[in-house]
Length: 273
Image (cartoon, rainbow, N blue to C red; front, side):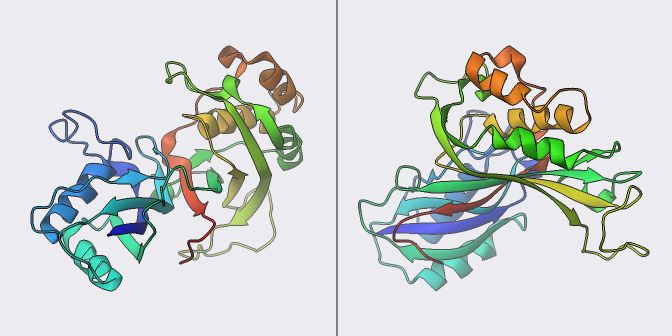
């Protein structure tokens, strides 16, 4: 029986989604191998291979990662798998749901679109409880300029410029359906004295939200690093057009830290949670 699972994790302690040779010995296991070890215990020594919707980098988090796996020895009730796996997994990885799916379902190839968000924390200092989940930028960012830069990303284009150097060869054309920036007040836990409206001294999050058909390795982190330069006034928004047209990685801004990147949702034609 083939199953799909909806997974949330904090990637701080992990080397990323993809299991890597010797990663556990280095003190940084992958999300994939941690889940597979839990499934091995649940399935009574039936070796299980997990396939994820995408390979998040070291330190990157997920609220909506989707995986598939096959269990041949026994047909399981989804709620039993959810409860059993959560009892075995560390607290920074959680199974939110499990569904039986058709044999042709594939977590990566069946995906219609994905949503990633990158979070810049704004304010006079970094809040400790958000240190591992956002990137603190002291200078107030120009959201109108950032949005103008994001507008150049929309549509079906070749995003080779934003692909990580050393990535495996392959198609680099992707379609971006939505690209927007928002200021979001920090609401949990409540910080005394914060007002709902944005001000120069307020603590808050600048959220870069992208929905696309797919994303290249470190593509969103390269976009975020470039948008930071635009938001700080160091580059013009139109540089995005030049970067895309050039297909030259050297024109992209610095690769933003993985800790502020979230895989938030993956859409499938016949899968609902």
